[in-house]
Image (cartoon, rainbow, N blue to C red; front, side):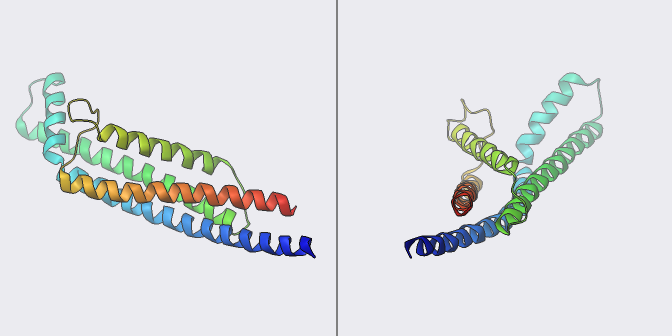
Length: 180
């Protein structure tokens, strides 16, 4: 009788962790869209700093150019970076989200998306440790206070989502292994 009760309890837990994987996968996809909006907004809000940095680089390396040409080059580079980073962000979030949903529904079980999620979590933590340094020591431009607060809140939520996704995947896999 105890074996059946344990199996019933394990199957309930497996269903719970599988459902959490599906929810985390959907959340990951939504955070991908948010990440694209956030990066675009940061680029718009911080365009003066980015423009000054790129202008200095273009003026030092280029032959004498007109101001309009320099402005066109700089805005083209900014737009290209925004599009490239948006594609990378959306595709990586889609990859992780879809894999989590598939594993939660019992279709596919791959480990690469968990390694990728762990890598992104480590990078997220490292970038915030770097952003918390004083502006003279940081290698990442420090944002305005209002922007920084929003970034910290959303990235903290993203970190929690990463941890929940990893925890649910590992717990579900352990229970599946135990059930046979």
